[in-house]
Length: 458
Image 1 (tube, rainbow, N blue to C red):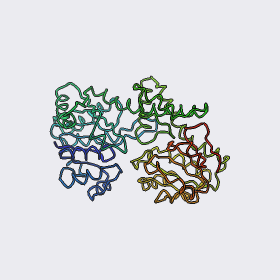
Image 2: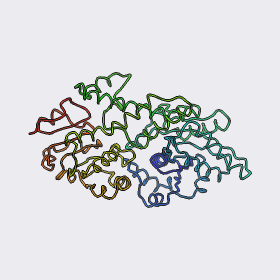
Image 3: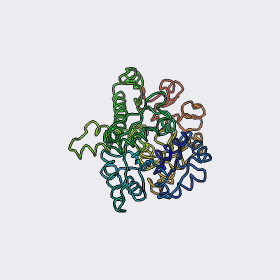
Image 4: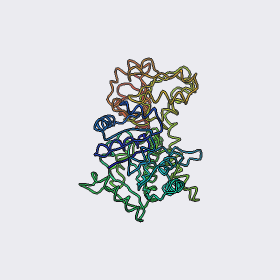
């Protein structure tokens, strides 16, 4: 099948590459000339395990191409995926300007039936708005062209997007029951047929339910994270080990273990903006979502917990202190820095006079760009980017862990201790066993594994 993907971010690029891998002829369209030039020259603008290899293989086979030519993109695909950004507006609602601009371009150039697929995460009612602007553009040309708009939300986890796309747990397709909607359903079933050979993964529903499903899913996952973080903070007060609690409740099949890890708050592009957008949608219908409001409040507070522990340990004075930070991206296996805990923590540490040596296996380039925006020149000069984890440690007053990259999980503690000024770790991801750390003389702060937070110095 011929498919056009509008947008080459995480969702668009992964969707395009994976559909090409399945044998489709895919054109990925973007208005960013630099990004398209990079892709056409063999580069990849984002980090996702396995994505670069799939792109290279399908470009060479002629199944995947990249272009900024809008007219060519519209003419190419019978199925047109809109996979552009929907960033939060000032009031927390999703900004649909890029979605509607893409829709207008499709309407401006289409001359025959198209299926327009809303892949971008967008509020309930977006498909109706997309239909309106496409119809306006068609009528402005005095044409009568049929089309159908469907909702096909993505459920991809950054750091595992390729695996999630190729082995989906569900494929949600929202379409109407009119003639064109049923025609669109048939084409979407044909496109996704390879995923349904052994088991039916596709869920058909009306468009608005499909739009709502995406927000409901992300909000539920965010709720689990904030709930567990709040329990962790209470465990700190009552003297319980939150890891034992997690195992105890996760063994209940009605609950399960996923998204029950305590930490320093969720980040990324999806959970923060999707929670805000659903809260905003509810307020527009005069139906406040009190639970979801609390989820957002808990997450904002959770991002300060590690900083509070650092301040407490040093008696509120960080002037002249130097910290090694391992992990800058909001989660492992991605270079995504959006709403990452590292951004708020480093901002606070440098504001209090501390300097930083930061290391991340893949996010250093993106991190440098983000911190250049976040910090003024004086504070940015106190931030160094290390090429290796050991390089960040030398001469630091303590180590702060913010992302649970695999390479941080089995470290050489004796070597780390020899490089640091103090045997001191602030672990925002609870990677190590507190008792074991204490037994070899570490001062080890977590969120929260043990009521005895501070070890006896060796």
